[in-house]
Image: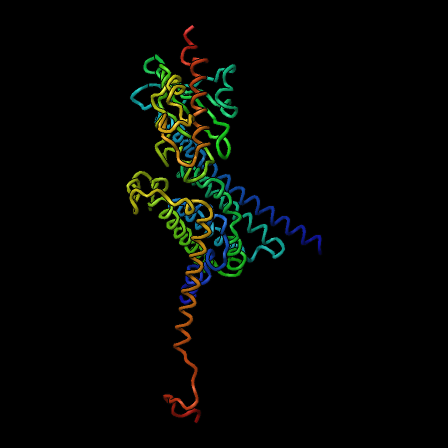
Length: 209
Length: 236
């Protein structure tokens, strides 16, 4: 009797598992392409925001190169899986977009991408993932505030002299982020380190010789 | 017909999952920072709730008591996974914002509760209506909390609706309080507790008031008071 009921019930559950798994499998098949497209669109949108379409004519998303191993530590440990996207106009490289991770945000690492023009100036910085405090630190996200745009146009030298947001002198450098000193310093330092990487590894010049 | 009215009233007000049963509080408190987040999670929950109530009701005579719970959970889990995949495909940015709370719909007790308490004992059509109304009731509370927090926290309403409705919704954002610097507590988790608590208190107040009025209307009959005689002859 007992054995019979166990057998019956487990068969029943097994049938259930098959049906539900089947439903999920079908949905997964149907949505696989739209999901891949949505992911690609999202990745592309971030890249094109930094380097607009007018400035280049190549496929920004797929024109990639690996990081230079000797200097990759400058971009942060978690960024080392990433790749550099290169923007070209004709065959001339005009800018590079580097992945970069600030390790010392207020609540964990802050992932961002930094666009650098061929002359070493910042084309744009975007935060792609973070866990900073809502209402304070999350203003580094362009959806919440314009602070991240204040890096545009700076190069390594102007970051080091005067423009340095992490310097505590009032009225100097980048706009303050009220109540989010740690977040602000973490992002600024990491942007500076990214520029250092660009200066030392020179990703846009490697394929000449 | 009356039955459906009763079921709807139950889901929307009397037995509201969030305000009376206090189920599903985790997503209620976690994602209601803005109206668009609340609506996104609400729609996903309605879809899962309707789907699971429908399928549970369809199989209610075939599943023995001993294995009914695992069977129900499997149904709910597969519906949730489908909802997750669909959101990923068609509302990718919103999916990224809601994050872990989409898969966590599986653990929303309101859904398993309705499957076991209602759908496993009732025919298909009432179960469908029950799922829909419970879902709508839950979503209404999500929206109310979301609107309160967005208004107090950022001074806007319906910001970022394009995440859900596409490009046409970009202009829907209403700035209710211009140049508002933001009220941080409303955005942080405590604001969710405060807003939800306020809504529960409001519902209890309204219920108490309705009861008081109903009591007033049916005053007890005092001896000696006049009555209207409505019958003439009893029996023959």
